[in-house]
Image 1: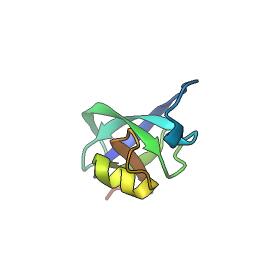
Image 2: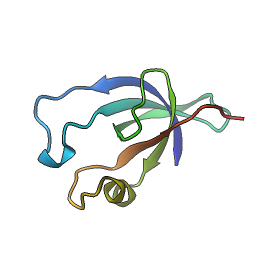
Image 3: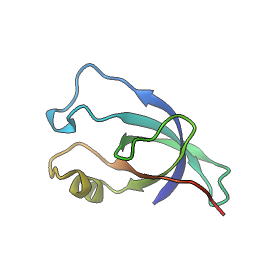
Length: 87
């Protein structure tokens, strides 16, 4: 699992049919203290996260596909939760 902050959305007119209109988010990685860790991810949003929110990301393709119920989905990273506090 990775802690990250939502910094933006990706919009695309053409998507894989199995993605079913799901939102792609741009995320900046955070360290255990909630500060910047360097690097970023692009992840499918399964939690309804918005700009500026801290999120928990599953960065393992097979687990992400199992959660979304599609064994052939082109996915690696999935936002699985919104973080209220890091402490």
